[in-house]
Image (tube, helix red, strand yellow):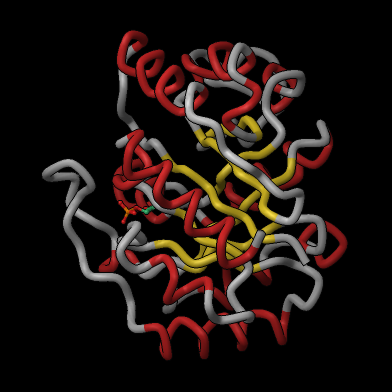
Length: 235
Ligand code: PGA
């Protein structure tokens, strides 16, 4: 089984800031083993930049349109990013909270992504995960990764790595075990205030197939620490 370490940049970094992160990370020698898959989910505008720094990890985005290409002003379809993106983070609770995205729309996005061979990472929350996963056909769900993330565990983006309280490990392990009982073919990741100081806790449990640092991934130095620790534990 692989371990997935996914950076979720959210709505951060202009072009010079993205380049400086990519330079810092790509200039640091990392001994990466094939058992740890590093995924960088950037804003769409940085997707082309990622292709110039393939050594930093697999390229991903944080959303796609629920519709195919066509007359949908402002939207970015899976067909448009199929050559650059290998992964797409879908259904993040922030998409629901601020953009009113529905469970049905997330299911449409999953279908679009899979049609263009982009692997969806479907985010679910403690209160709704049954409904969120049931809305995706089983044949599609088994091609997805799942991200379990309680919204209250998400960091405030203050200071160099963000400030927040991760969910207790025992709670995460119990929830992920339950999710796996109903989606046995999908790796399940945990997200919510994962930093270099607590990542070892989550990766020491074999039930957890990876983690999704958000604010901690914005800081190149912190991100490199996170990669080094994950290599040590799961590499
Ligand atoms: P955080 O974000 O690490 O800043 O809490 C994680 C996420 O929301 O994906």
